Image (spheres, rainbow, N blue to C red):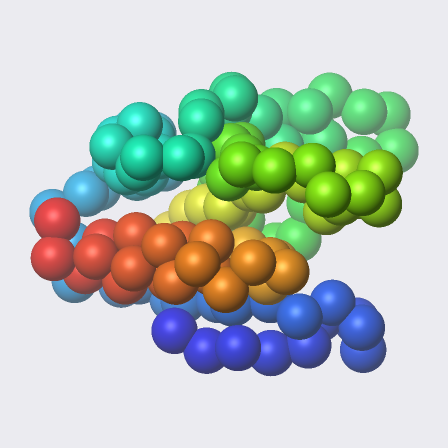
Length: 130
C-alpha cells in the first residue's frame, strides 16, 4: 500500500492487488469482504455500495479510462462524535475498488482520524490474505 497525493491536493492510500494474490476474484467479493470488516468494527457503520462504473457508463458524456472493467465504492462512517459542523465535510468514508483486468486497484482518501486510517489500511492489506 502506498500513500500519495492525487491531483496535487488529495491524500490517498492505494494498493494494487494482482488477482493471483487473493482468493477474492471479483469486485463484488472484495466489496462483500470489506462490508464484513465494517460490520465487525465496533464503531463503523455500513451505509451502502455505489456502482460508479454503471453510473458513469449510463451518462451521455460519461468517460471511463481504458482498462477499467468495473468500479464500485463501499460507503461507511466511523463518526462517533460531532465536534463541529465542519466534520461533516469529511464524512462518510469510502473505499473504491476497480477491476483492471489482471489486477484490482483499491483506494481511499486519508481520513482526519488516525484510527480510521489504521482500520482502513488493515482491511485493504488483509485482502492479500483473504
